[in-house]
Figure 1 (cartoon, one colour):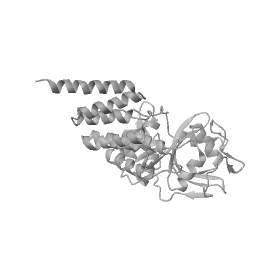
Figure 2 (figure 1 turned 180 degrees about the vertical axis):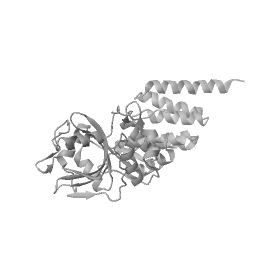
Figure 3 (figure 1 turned 30 degrees about the vertical axis):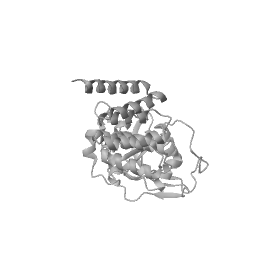
Figure 4 (figure 1 turned 135 degrees about the horizontal axis):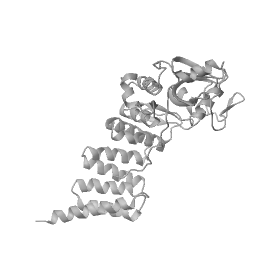
Length: 333
């Protein structure tokens, strides 16, 4: 089956925070975080403040798992997954998240474990405004920070609150249930980590400032590890965006995987109508019809894909060959 989205970005290495906090204390608070990119909070104001963003917000009842080892990834993920209704804890997450050779956790594994827990891992844009907007909508945000001189320590934490008037950000971090940083301090550490962050959502929940394609790209990897949750997320996405052809394709993929060829064909045909300039829906329709034994319909569908010719012409050619091979086999006595 063809898929209309790109693969994940390369991950980064992450370690625990304990050494960084100790170093900062030893230097009397003079250690400055490493940062990249221009500040997003200047002169007491967000550089790009979303419309309607409240002056302050705090997500209540986010669990806390203190950690002063290399398990900041499992601790942070346990906090947001428990908040999202998943029965898990740090010890159960460690085997999925700790890479012994790195003595830490990779971003990619954080997203993968979230999906296996049947939650949508939606990576937010590298924007303080979008981060705070998610907190204001009740979504704690896992963030990657880069801390300390000279240690260059990578650290996961969870943003649970902010206050623009009092210039503060509140985090679940290491052994601190409510670590409070100035917004500028936090932004510098977050910039050092590439301003990477994500929210863990139940199917049917949507992040602040959600973008349809980004959301559907977050759902797509769940098809193989949490198909029921992916199905619900796609259905809710279609209720919100009726023309979201990627969601139609996803529902078709899920139906095809459970050998419901008729439902798969219906979804792929729906996607082909919604997005006529792309050959992938036609190709997948051809494969579903081939599985159902409708060789004539399969030929027509793959011919449509070949006529469009993009984005996967070689795949369409192979599908045509499979159809002709099946037709030749059916003619043998």
